[in-house]
Length: 348
Image (tube, rainbow, N blue to C red; front, side):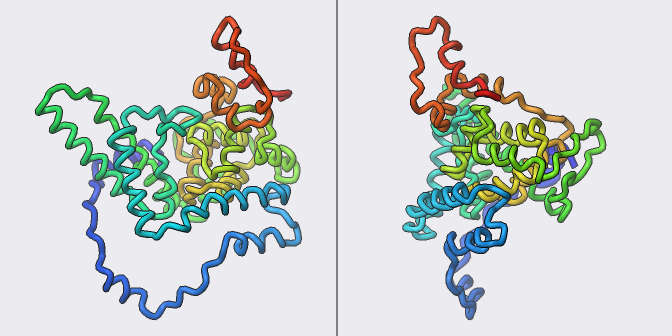
């Protein structure tokens, strides 16, 4: 199936249902009566069987890197564990409403660095089930309805105020990957999950894992010497997140340039991402590696992508340690010359 075909069909034949009311506490209590919750394992408990296996490694990567990622995740989640579930849901809903009403219309979602409210950052709440796609849909529609009424009354509200429909489009994309995963079943994890009928160009065969282990190690640890990719990996390792633009470039480099099996990248993302969703992660990786439901053969040129979406090198300099001691001169004649040093490949 093709994403565009799915989205058109779902819009025509699948209206979004209304939000259901909150179930009563008595119903919830009856449903779980007699079930022993037991002790919830810690992240250290879950990771121990993997790190203590005979190989002593995950995906052939250094144990120090794995330990760093686990500790970063523990540190990030310590604050969240202090909140009750109801407080966390209230916070998530408030964040959704704030983003829709204040930032969505002006967000530049294509940037490498989306830390300045250029991304909704709703993916973690969606992945954990704290928010539902229907809540996002109805929040957007409610805001649009209010803006239309204000515009009709005053006649002075610019159209861009209501331009937050892209959030609904992103929910459609998410639904596509979920339904495609259900349809494909175990095939979702094959090297070539499915073959769209009108896709003429098939990717080359990927290198076998032992042969590509060194290249994968460099990619997964942020040592490709491609600044945008390395910065993205460093952000992912430290925060459990990186922007969609950077994720696409990371996938393209691994599958199209390094010619490694896309599933290695998907598994690494699964290990690192705070917002991991099986269907969205594996679906996106297959999509951008040329074996998913995409009629195009996408191959990103990561250097030009950095110039376009991180034109001043802020993202690269923020997440790439090679630039810790680099002082960019302010007396260069041209703007582009000032930042070129942060965006070119290093000894690639």
